[in-house]
Image (cartoon, rainbow, N blue to C red; front, side, top):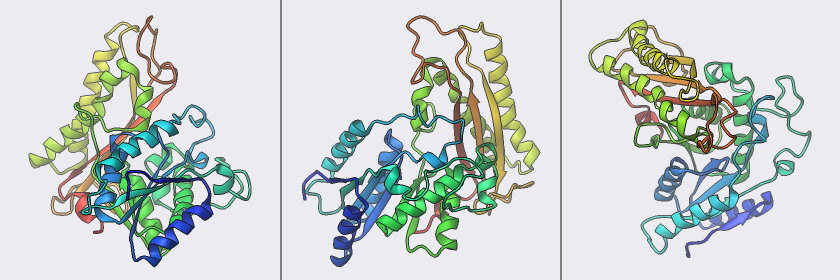
Length: 344
């Protein structure tokens, strides 16, 4: 098998390839993406290659997981660059019989993915949707109503099309992994959800397709989120278990950084807002008042990097020219690792 794969944009073609793999007794791992691939996505593909005969990757920007006023139109769409990255990764496993291969990339159209009514992001919009409550209405769901409805709906569609043995998601999007696992369990879907460790930049910033919006100025400050989370981890390691005491360590980090930025002139600073910090159990994401080290907890947070003030000539403002708010999310584990609970 060469270091190339087939690119399908028709559902029937994907199903035909999947049927051939099934008849041959060969497993299929599936990595759903919205494109703008980075090393975090490629880590999912690498894990899938190690565990399956075939790996299918989807590249589809799903409109129903963007809110009415969110950045669907400006979301980076880089299909050719994404295919080149996948070709390079596939070449690493060419002729290596110890691993599987990337054999299919699925790039469907919205008309095919939503063949009935035009997809709607309105909360009361018409259409066929999958809703997972209460998981979808807290944390990210509270800040982005309808987001997880869109995620669950498109994943249900993709899982039905591909019929994968295993599906791969990143640990960074912890609430998404919980929603998907709940959907798989509740609807008795015949697939196995695999969660792969977050891939980070050198300063700890979690890799995300939205990082391209940051530009140089906001990028330097964006690491405040992981620094805040790690401050809580240090407090936990030192024996702190009470919620208020743990989260105060995170708030101290962000308040110090905000004070530092506010002291700078507008043409140099980068302001941000904290959306939330959460300390919750790792299954239902129920908020905890006290952490039992033997059970562990998920510590997550979200911040909004505000638009760049007084852009300077020749300043690297990132995609979108620094005009849009960039929302960053991240999480770490306290106590037992969430990955240990990911089904083998």
